[in-house]
Amino acid sequence: MSLIVNKSDLDRLGYLSIAPEPGINLVEAIQEMKREKNAVILGHYYQTAEIQDISDFVGDSLALAQQAAKTKADIIVFAGVHFMAETAKILSPDKKVLLPDLKAGCSLAESAPADQFAAFKKNYPNHLVVSYVNTSAAIKAQTDIVCTSTNAKHIIDSIPANQDIIFAPDKNLGNYLNSITGRNMVLWDGACHVHEQFSLEKILKLQQENPDALTIAHPECEKPVLMVADHIGSTASLLKFTIQSDKQKFIVATESGIIHQMQKANPDKLFIPAPPNDSTCACNDCMYMKLNTLQKLYTCMKYELPEVVLDEAIRIKAEKPILKMLEISERLGL
Ligand code: 13P
Ligand code: SF4
View (cartoon, protein in one colour):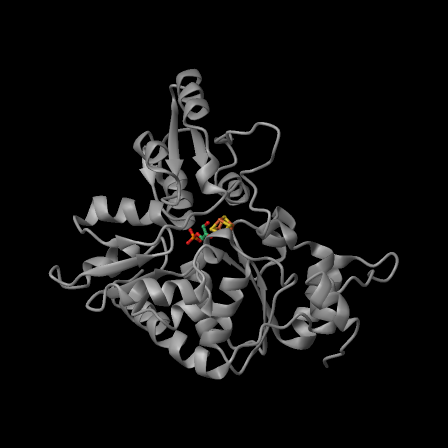
């Protein structure tokens, strides 16, 4: 069933602003709709705790793309941001892919407009393009191999050493990858507004106050923050590190949503969110990820809107580099 209701809300707000029925239990109603509609909810680690808890699968961007490629569900409800839902649609074009709020974008993906990237690429005709999954389908369509933070090093290592590479769009991740692979990739000048705002001074102060804590950081953070981290990795890698470490305290330099899974997996350990430069904002919350709410999730599943749709010509071009990434990841057991 698909009802077109308040279509103008979708254009204006990005979601349907229809109040749920009074007194309804949203969690139970969502669970019921999952069964009725054969829908699967894929939730990213940066979602709110309540959305993570109602998701069928919670993971990082690689794991969610892998799930999207193999799910048997008829409807994929993506509790994440637009590029993630778009990746699911690219991989599963026959399925209905829903995103609770179409305005859940990504400052990093937006830092690479497709036309500007095409012009940039022309300057490097012999370079291969490796793009981080945090890009639009139009950028993926101009890419040779997609990567995520979990598999980026492996993807780059799989390319012959004498092959020149453009890496887009995250310059911090790109710089980090250049340092660990010994490459000199040409970098697009993009960044994530959440990971760029961690305060080195405040992290150093926290480290002094908590000498027993380990600092863990996502590679989208700036180099000075990465230099004082004990472990650098994707959200999945950071979570795994907290489970495997015998330490009890961690300073976490990534979006704060991941702390929910860290705390669930390690109830006796302490997680301290790395502070942003501006102490008056909750800047270590991704404002795009947090646009999704339980209420929007309910409405989106009930009315099967907003739906992610794609131009088929772009989808076909964007699929190839994602499939290459999935093949390499599978071969390497990632
Ligand atoms: P992961 O690949 O670790 O899930 O990161 C995605 C993301 O958006 C980081 O900001
Ligand atoms: Fe994009 Fe940054 Fe939000 Fe991740 S945390 S979705 S990179 S804006």
